[in-house]
Amino acid sequence: MRIVIGEDQLLLREGLVRLLEEEGHEVVGSAGDGPDLVRKAKAHRPELVIADVRMPPSQTDEGLRAALEIRAAEPAIGILVLSHHVEVRYAVELLSGDASGVGYLLKQRVADLDRFFAALERIRAGGSVIDPEVVSALLGRARGDPLAALTPRQREVLALMAEGRTNAGIAEELVITEKAVAKHVAGIFEALGLPPSAEGHRRVLAVIRYLDR
Image: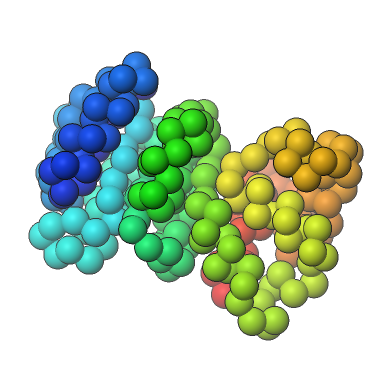
């Protein structure tokens, strides 16, 4: 996979390059600030961009802004945004458009190499990945949220959906049948008012509906 990295911390940036190249990926560019990340992405046209949320020059959400600009110009490029902390509003902004081929993970997930590389592949394939800690933070909010009507099992299924698990993967994790998972997923969509649609990914929209309230 051809990848461009945006990360202002040199050691982490070089560490990501090494990890990705050892896995057989091609890092075609790296940048230490938002504007340079946009330039590198436009110049190299990678399959995936990995960007830190907070980058120079503003050290606020410069990396996210760059990722959204890249996404707007080249929708086929996958986007994975990394953050030190759970930033719900950033996840909402990243995923509130076309959620296919985008991901939001905490930086600590990079240490779990199997899951990290699996997340990259899901994003390249057009899937979406949301960090489980983001989901946990959301599920722990007050009762007035849209998920209040969900059963505990449906909440478990939704959390695993947000991690990018397939129905088969969810069934394996929860030790239930795929048919049971499908029933829970249908119940989630119904409870959140997400009817069948040819556009968007209802699995991700289920989480977005919870986030964007």
